[in-house]
Amino acid sequence: MMASFIVCFVSLQTALAFTPKNPEIQGVLAELAKESKAKDPAFTEFSAERGKTFYFFEHTDSAEGDKRSCATCHKSDPMLPSKHAVTGKKIDPLSPKVQRDRFTKAAKVEKWFRRNCKWTLERECTSLEKGDFIEFIYSL
Image (cartoon, rainbow, N blue to C red; front, side, top):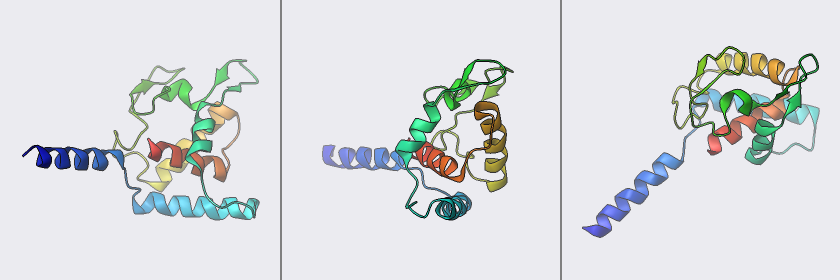
């Protein structure tokens, strides 16, 4: 009886620990990898570790002088709800493990990268940054 409980518990923990990438986001990652390889022939794969570094990197805004990072609005734990640093608008958890509809539609992913990268970095994110970011978020 106890052995069955342990097997069920471990199986549940394993299932919860892994969030599979849907086919659409796999397609996005494949396209980002193609772009990254074209820009840098040495590119081999995206990195969750680089994505984590990118997530916490603080950029100083040239006009305002304030420091901005992904964590400014999405918190240091992307699995928690947060709010926008300027508008105060509620932001659902960034992690697809918690918020199942995150990173499911390519157009929506691109829209939010464009908007958030311009606000945070004052430029669009590179294909490498986007791919690394997605890998980091899925690694949580």
